[in-house]
Length: 261
Image (cartoon, rainbow, N blue to C red; front, side):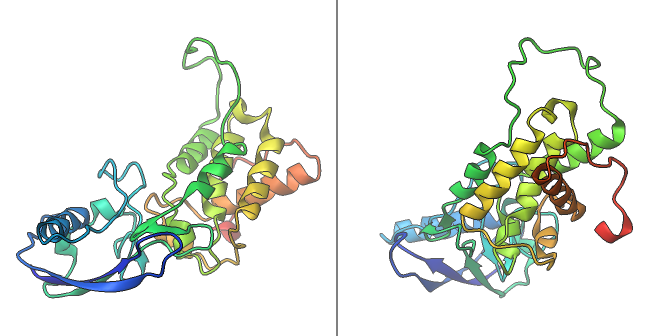
C-alpha cells in the first residue's frame, strides 16, 4: 500500500511549525499506524534527516501515550481505538493522511507530534488518589461494595489519560478526564473520606491549567478510546456541587437517567 503523509513538524516549543509531505510505499496493510511511522523514520534517518518525534510506549492500547490527530480525528477514524491499535488496512490505498499533535491551549507542542500533557498529571496530583496507609492487602470481601457502584467506578477507571477528549473538544475541555478520575474514587468507600476535597481540588486545578469549559458538544465521548460514558461528567457536576455546598452525601448509585445519556 502507498500513502501520502502530511505531518506536522515543529523543532521546539517556542518555534514555528509547518506540515511536511512524505510518500511511503510498499506498506503492509497489517502494519499499525505507529509501525508505518517507524518505517518512514528509518527512511529519514537513512537520508540523514531528523526522524519524526512522536510518543509511544506499550503499543497495546493501554498507556495512552500514542497521542496524535489523524485526518482530524484524535487517534484516527475508528471508535474506541488508540493510534497504536489503528492499522493501515483501515485506510484506502493511495490515501492522503494528515497527522497533527493534540491541539489545545493546555497541551503545548514540545516537538513534532509530542505535546506536554503535564496538566493532566497536575489534575491527578490535586486529589486523584486515596491517601491512606492500607498496610497489608486485605481480603477481597473485607469492604463490601455494591455491584452498581463497583461497575460504575470500574467504568470510569478505564480512562488511560491520553487526552483525546481534550483534543476533540472545541473548547479544549478536560471535563471527561477529570470526571473519570473523580468518579472512580467517589463511588467507592475507600474514597469517601477525601471526597469533597478531591473534587474541589481537581476541578480548581483543571481550571487553573487553562482547559476550557464543557459546553455539551459530546465530541469528547466520541473520541475517547476507552469509551468513558457521557454521564460521568454529570456525576462530576453533582460531586462538585455537593462539595461546594458542604454536602457529604453520596450521589445516587443507580444507572444514569435518560437525560444523562
